[in-house]
Length: 137
Image 1 (spheres, rainbow, N blue to C red):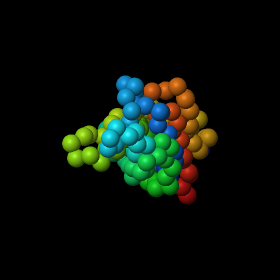
Image 2 (image 1 turned 90 degrees about the vertical axis):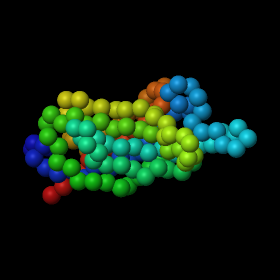
Image 3 (image 1 turned 135 degrees about the horizontal axis):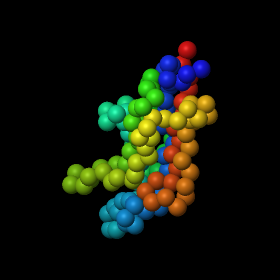
Image 4 (image 1 turned 30 degrees about the vertical axis):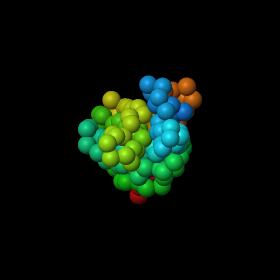
C-alpha cells in the first residue's frame, strides 16, 4: 500500500537535548549563575511551512508530548524538524538545538516502522528524537 495516498497522525513524541548547547555553553543560567534545566520544544516543517509545533516542556532535558496533526505527505516533500530550547527571559532568544531533515521525502521504511527514532548520545544539541506515524482510515 502506498503510504503517500493516506493521511498519517503524526506526533513528535519525544525530544531529549544534550547536556550543553551545540557550542558547549549551558542551556540556561538562572539567578546567581545557577544552571537550570532546559525547556525543549520542536517544530516540523513540510516544504518550509510549519506543520506541527510542540509546546515547550518546562525544566526538562527530555520532553514527551502527545499532541499531533494529520498529514498527507507527498513522496518528494522536504520535511525537517527543528529542535529548540525555550528562553523565557525577555531579552534572550530561544536557543537552537539542531535540525533533522529528509530533503528528498520521508523514506517508506519510516512509514512501515510507524516511527522514526534518532538516538545519538554524542550529538551536540539534541541526542534523541522520536516521531510516531499512525495510519488514518
